[in-house]
Amino acid sequence: KKTVSSAPTNSVPVNSASNLYLAAFNKRLLGAMQSKIGIPYRYGSDGPNTYDCSGLVWSVFQSAGLPFTRTSAASYFKSYEPVYGEERFKFGTLVFFNGLGHVGIVIDENTFFHASQSKGVTFSPFAGYWSKRIVGYRRIPLNFN
Image 1 (cartoon, rainbow, N blue to C red):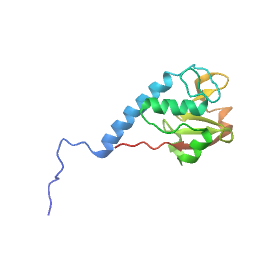
Image 2: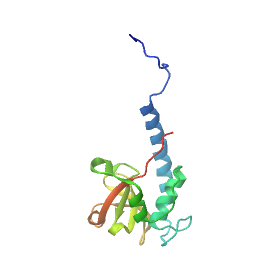
Image 3: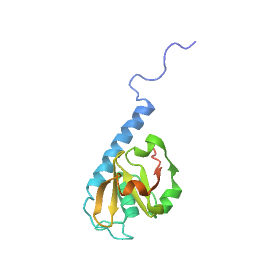
Image 4: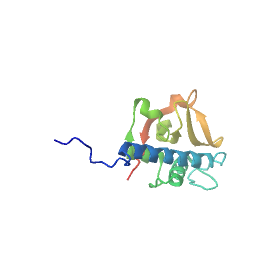
């Protein structure tokens, strides 16, 4: 009968390593977002001097170290798994609006980040205009390996 763990006492449990990776990734993602605030909107653009919504999403995730193919908001919606309940409001979740014609990145249950046609790259509240236009939420899978 085994009475002692064979794991080294200085090893980091997998969930702790994943949490550290996620915290570091989220810090890079937020930094990438903040660096683009105020940049003007332009349809079809993925930076660095102008962005549309899907180009902005692609660019900030690229800058944070998560590469994926640049495509449209509708394609992102079809490519990633839906999330529901409280999972919708986790930082970094994609939020889709207006019949899949617009995408942003969730900051928290009150705010999201996006490329606005009228304001350029900005943070906006869900309350009011945007809350009535939400189509759904998706998460881009993070690889912890």
